[in-house]
Every structure is written in structure tokens, then in C-alpha cells.
Length: 209
Image (cartoon, rainbow, N blue to C red; front, side, top):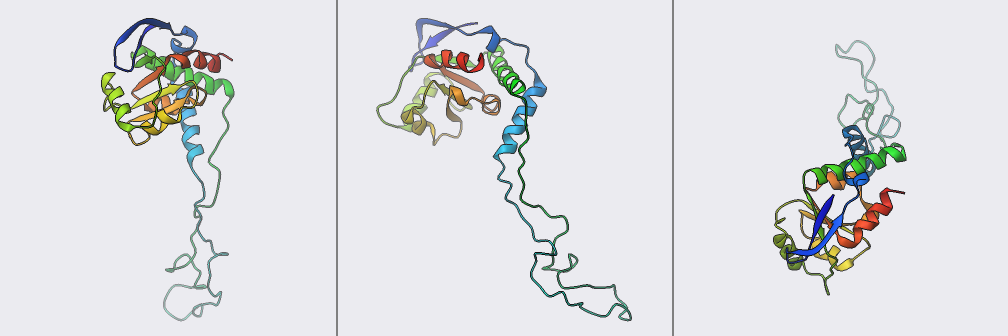
């Protein structure tokens, strides 16, 4: 697949880039995308939720009233789950929500997500550039020039660029990520991918090894 390279003004340059069919033109596997996304979201959960059970809630273990003869139901201690301020039955406890996926399946999921973006013509190749200092206005102008304003956009860099990262940080619809950190969730979450020219080779090195 051959795509034109755009500059930061939104104009086509004389250069083109060929995207590898083994990355951007495979038969997508929806189930692999589902599993990889599910794992990513599970790993984001802190799992620090905790509730007090009968052995941990504070209170006396004294029986509140005699067993029989009151005309009411039996009652144990004040720590009973039936009473206000008592324990909780089978409440949430700290846990790790993560689970394992095979490396090849995760690779398939990411290639599938990239292939969907390519098939929908939602990939823009942009020539390498940077800002002298972080400025959100410059990033907004870039998206307007590329006619991507108001759309969820993911920019892929070959290496860390603090100016670009800080310029996009205040924009809800835009995110900047390194090629080596690409994941299925971020790819499918974005409507459009902006791939810097220098990161095309980095993506191929990452996903073909």
C-alpha cells in the first residue's frame, strides 16, 4: 500500500511511503482484538477495592438478645451483615484483574487493528517535524490542516518528543504515542492514525520481529 506524505500544513509532498502488506493488509481477527483490548483494560484496574467481612469489622461479638421468646427473628452480634454498620457478605477484596495472552495473539490483534485503519483509509503519513516549545495551539492548527479537527486522533512517533507530547496533552481527542508502545486499544479507540514518516520503519521493525 502506497500513501502520500503530507507536511504540517496539510499539503501533499512529492514523496510517498509504501506500507507493508504483512502489517497493514492482513485478514483482521476480531476475536484477537477483543481479547487484547480486554487484557489492556483489565491491566488498568487497580484492584485495590476492599470491604470488611465479619472477622475484620469492629464491634462486640455479644449476642444482642436471647434466642427465643422475643417474637422476632434470631439475632447474633452487632457485626451481623443484616444490621446497619455490620459486615458485608462476599464483598470485593483486593485482587489482580490481569490475565495472560500469548505473544502471537497480541501481535495478531495489533496487526488486525492496523489493517482495519488502512482498509478504512484512516491513516495519514506526516513528514517528521517538531516544535521549538510546547504549544497546544500549534497542534490544533496541525489537526485543522489535516482536516482531522474534532476527530479522535493518535499520532505515532519513532521516539519520544516532549514538545509534541505536551502540545497534545490538553486535547481530549488527540494522543501522542511511540511506535514501540502501540497497542490494540489505542489503535481502535482512535478514528485516525497520524504516522510520522520516520516511525514507519520503526513500526515495521517492531511488528515484524
